[in-house]
Length: 78
Image (tube, rainbow, N blue to C red; front, top):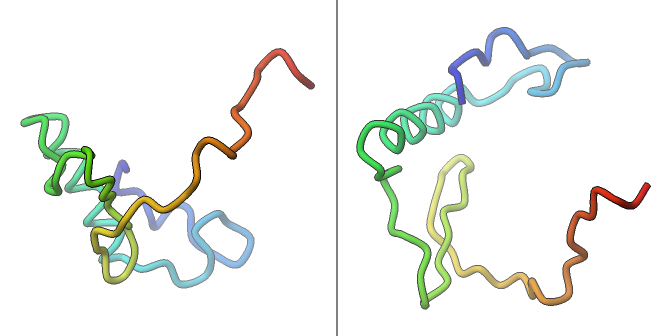
């Protein structure tokens, strides 16, 4: 998000030994665009349930996760 991929690379780091710089730049650009214009560069989530899958390459895809069956985070539980 903050374009600091080089600070978090390596075999024991979150991004791993060879993270995709292109993806890091795409995500950074989406955050900048969203913060300045309100548009991250992909269609708004709506009734057609399409979401942006950020990867190499990125693409829109159907949101086919049955969210009704996903356990929600409860901060009061340990």
